Image 1 (cartoon, rainbow over the protein chains, first blue to last red):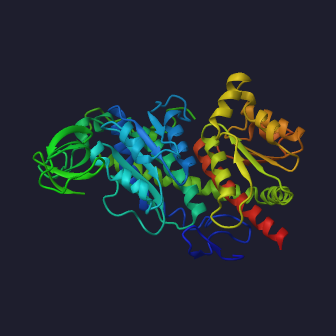
Image 2 (cartoon, rainbow over the protein chains, first blue to last red):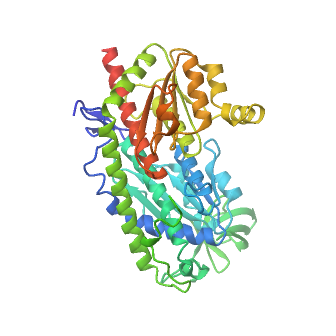
Image 3 (cartoon, one colour):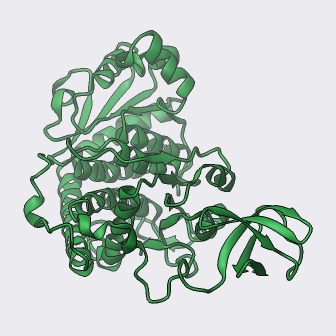
Length: 258
Length: 218
């Protein structure tokens, strides 16, 4: 190592370069990291294949690295392997407000795939609305700190603090996401609608509180969006919410803010 | 690659398949194997072109030190590589920022040129407008055969710019075209693995440019 370098996280690291000027941590170690994310990649790929099969659109976003979001979308829309299906994928433009754009655009059954740091507030706000909008969410990132549990349906997190190494490995991750998604298309029995709800306790089917996003409020009543569909609920039990707020709904009543 | 070339890895299972666990295990194994292939290709590529990277970095650092700017371009996924390079050079994770721009980022310019002149000229016409002899033209292609890249490299050389190409497979026309002064080739038949190794080359080249600029400033 010639000199320590400062990574984007502000921590001093010696993995930023070596005597040959090679960026990243080099060959050692990086190959082993896949073990930690291979299962997450597999599950996310199957989930995407199911959503695509049922007509979903994949929305890609990366406020910090917009080129990665564009790469994901072009990968799915225009496959590099001739004969593979063109899939509905879109990039949310870097300059657009992520929540506003997705709120207006997504339909139930769509997917939202983001590449972002664990503390990206815009991405956090967009993904937490997944249950209300009816979207399946995938969060790809890197670093020692992961997003809080439950931030997304699928979290694919690389164990590196080196910005350059992370950026390289993101390309591998979304290439593999595409490759594995297409493998899943060969397993049509696993892509049916009923396969989407196989958990013992499914929030969609059970009688638990469901997350909903407030659309409009009129006195004690509000129109909300839950699982992507609008419904009218009673909000008299909670502090008056405003449009865009997230509330928990049970049996037609908002029972709490979220 | 033919669409069926990997089918043997994933035996066809009937449409009444209901247990996802064996598929998920297969997918995870496949991901792990491909990750290792990508890592091996990265190591092989960086070692094979190490001397070339030093030469390119030194030549680029000379241009930057003389006030030169970097113009990056490519099509499809390679267009996103060009965007990524522009971001890396102008907003680096460490080191100093230098002037760099992607020629695919302005949709108005891109569509105007494509509509009025043709797609082969979308990059070369921008170089005519912006390029100076101190600048660097960097083009990304997995095949090495993109017409609009070769037109752009030819134009860049006419204007005295330094030309750097990143290509894959066997380097294609970029590897043999005299207008591409430095052609860094990733030797793989897989477009995905080529792009992954090109990402490594991009990082390695940028780090060397930073070192060369630091040495020039010292």
